[in-house]
Length: 269
Image (cartoon, rainbow, N blue to C red):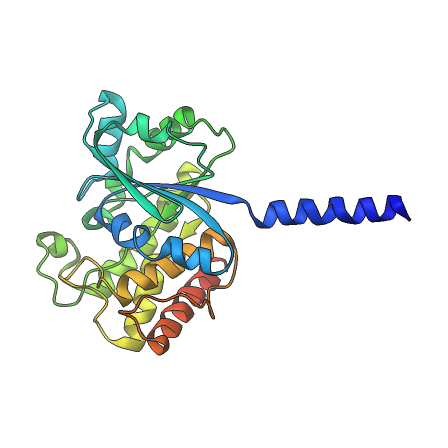
């Protein structure tokens, strides 16, 4: 009987330790990763009992080519924001290698600059960047994933919207096709489908997810992105999560959660 009790207690301890596991995620990105992970993501995960350490290697508008160039030269051009225990610490003028080596990251996301996201020829250095990240990261079991960015608003005045004939649907289609073509080439199999959840939300809410034609609305736009990341990282269905900021009412929050969940479901098909 004592042996049985000890076995049960040991099993409970193992399950409890796994449930309390801290997930450490780093985004090598730009303002689109800032929109997606620096607000609401930590709180969403905490509301369901998960703990995250969130890092963002930020340069506004940064492309794959610029990240790769910085990896080679060691230029300290990044603003490094790290969220631990819900508190954000920001360091300026940090080199990419120093950010990657800063923690035992479980997941590192890569992404393309939004204006290049649907242009396959701009992904030429993705393999080199991925290999470099894997070589530098202290955790040799780290997973490299892809952060899918979103198409611009229909009335966007972004200078690069012309690459897509100023057509939101064309831009979205090109992003999807480019991911399908380029990511298998470099061995990236998992995608955080924020662009998909944003597009789904537009179908329900109208074209109101952006605040300036390309960056996300600071309330429900960013919340939709954070919901997508939360479900991806934790593996828990985000629908019904109790957390939403005061700027997002409960009904809208539930809609955002549903769009994120549908995107996660669809990307797995």
